[in-house]
Length: 435
Length: 188
Image 1 (tube, rainbow over the protein chains, first blue to last red):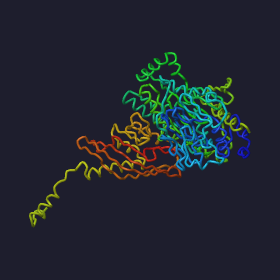
Image 2 (image 1 turned 180 degrees about the horizontal axis):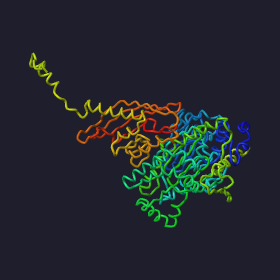
Image 3 (image 1 turned 135 degrees about the vertical axis):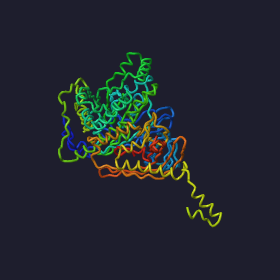
């Protein structure tokens, strides 16, 4: 029915431009939730968010409220947050520990951590009715998989496994975890949540848009560069976190010299390393720890990976060199929630954690010195696309110069709009599947 | 004075003499309370008037402005913080806001602070440390919309040759953990 109301989607997405309705139309948005978000692998959270049995964390996949729960045997279950009796949500808090079991606040139906029924009051009342035992269990997400501690849920019964689906984009999680001598991270127990008044695709497109930083973030880049210079004159030292901000205003040419990669299912990577490998005593000590754990050759491989940002389409932006991740949850055509997390590398000196913490606080916190101007852009973008001042969104830059090598599309131009074209290629496949 | 010299009775003479005695400012007395309140109001006005340098100058050279993401944090050092800014980082924020290409500053934007419930918790005249708690309510206009922020301030003040200065300001917002509709552009 929904699909019938929507105009021919293939006519809305051309290889180098897309129609504005893709960002504004409520029916298209509902179809996105159903065909993309409720079909593919969506980030649930990190295993360390739910350490003990009964720990839970709620999250949203498309329109579906879910919760990941740590079971008694250590297994993580993903349940629909809904009592099978009358539909009341079982988890009232956003996260916490369920205590002795999952209990519905309405009529006291009780469940084990895996969602199976433990007890219900007045069981005799169901004798002789058509009510079956299996109706008593909370519904589970059809598929749950994790990779290196990062848990994903899929509401589709069938489909590629998580690793097949991630493909080369799995490097995002390898690049986070391999920076720990133990090969593991744990979550920093704080989730910043910021709402943008714009379509979720603005977020996904922005993350690999290497042209915007020098324009959008000019004010912050210049301000940070000024103060960075003052501090250097005063103390002879340049704190690294000022560079994290001043680097936003490197010239277009420098951004354009980076490489971008497009993969199946719409995942993309922007290469480029943010100068985070200085030769200060902390870094030297850290590199020794890694060399001891992995050997010189592996250490070198792990630390010289050329990744600025990985986008796991449609919901994740991962900055692996800084152990940070943003998950987006579309709320409406013009409203998107982002959940912003930081991870601590196990077994590394405190100084290394603190270095990336600066980025979390200065760039990713709700008082961000950077995203204030991004959100402003996307809001104005949403309004512009709602207007009849033009129907098309242009993704022409460097079109025709991408190199297709098997399933991988490469561009030697960091500023190429190839990532957006790749995302819309996947978008069209998801949206028209089964049509 | 002339009247005080001509008391009618001895008892009456003692009472006015007592009142007239010079009163030493008490560390927790009215004078300090007044001084602290004036500082808090000056800070609120600096924010509302967008006099950013005046705001920064209320801090000591090593002063910090800190907004934790939740009440259970006890230090800004090494933990996630919504704000954890020394004077240098405050200067970055000021310069950003004042930059002609601070795009997010194009729409109409401003705040109104109310500070109240000011309690001097502790004052040590020898070290010059004063600890103050208070409550705030901020209304912010951005474009055509209002947002509300409320919570508590904790000021650790230090007596300097230039008067009381802020060594650490802790800002706990009741809505610190709630999703942010847009972001916080300036100090709350």
